[in-house]
Image 1: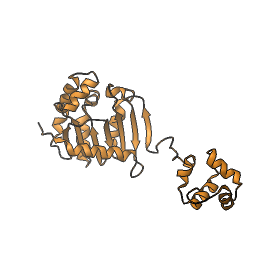
Image 2: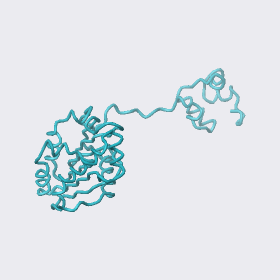
Image 3: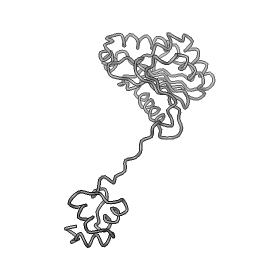
Amino acid sequence: MASGGWTYAALADKVEVDPKSVERWVNLGRTPRRGTAVLAAEILGEDVHALWPALRQARPARAVSPELVALYDQRADIPVSTFVDLLTQAREHIDVLVYAAVFLHEAYPRLNDLLRERADDGCAVRIAIGDPDSTNVRQRGKEERFGHGIESRCRLALMHYRPLAGVPGIEVRTHATTLYNSIYRADDQALVNAHVWGVNAYGAPVWHLRRSGKGGMFDTYACGFDAVWETATPVRGG
């Protein structure tokens, strides 16, 4: 107002309020009604939110993502049949990103047969497991106070999945990345197991996602899988 030569009365006349109202804006930090504030800002050639930050409306948060099907407190709460059913329903894509996740083979010995069957039906199967010799896997063992156990489980996972390497439609790779979450994807659905520092994966939350459109949570994790996959090393059959 000072730089433009505006008095309380002059500005009040332009925005059709009492001069005392303008005085309160300046001296007491009062915030005018939105319409009045916008008009005053236009007259002064200033940004309305710079003059009155309180008028800045925060983007309302959604209570629940439309892609969130279910949220589990920990992976241990989910029966293995939930994972198996998800993979069984896949027709186009199966992506698994883990360090080991040997619980699947231990609880469901037919897992390799299931993956072969899906591949035979035209489903593209990609399995990415942790490189037991990588720094990140060893660090994860320390953080979970699991010691070399995590490395042993990665080797066990490799032993389980190696017979699938070279099977048409199935690719198995090892990765050395920092794993922020495990992903079990089947077409447009995914179970995402969060990783929490110092907590074994079975004690960390899992969210079940169903893709509802481009750019959602599902796509975020799908792109994350693709990024890790590009860094991974193919496993030879044996």
